[in-house]
Length: 193
Image 1: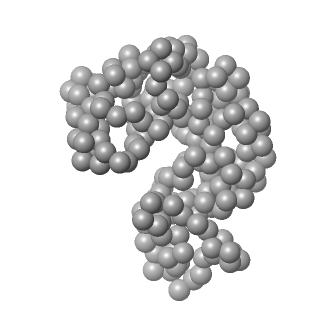
Image 2 (image 1 turned 180 degrees about the vertical axis):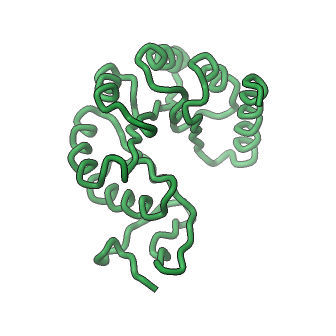
């Protein structure tokens, strides 16, 4: 799709959703598909303030500084979330130190449960929230729900819709507000059918 037409479609879809569900707080994920100017144009044109803007463009200090300055100048509370795809941990540390990253997204499987346990206290100390990437596998959602319950500081758990004839996920069905409360059972509360 032509970039301008694609951006316009993204704006229209976001605005239609915001109009249809005014009580919902949205987040957007560009999957590194925008550049900084397109990101700013998108945020200026939508009729809702996002919880966070995920991976607007491939993370780099210059463009994220421009995005931060734009958000700050408009007093928008939209958070910047990044670090999901092929994360450069050294760059992520620099972005955190320079207040250019609000939500750390590294994939739960990619970093590993134990390494997330080690990383979380540092994020908390530095004022950065987490939302470990879970897309692609329902078990990541389960593991992240437990990580969140145990360590806190997880802004949102990405819900992966999946079904299994082998594993009973029923204890992880979200409530009417979309919250998941991990069961107090061994084995992450999962049972085999």
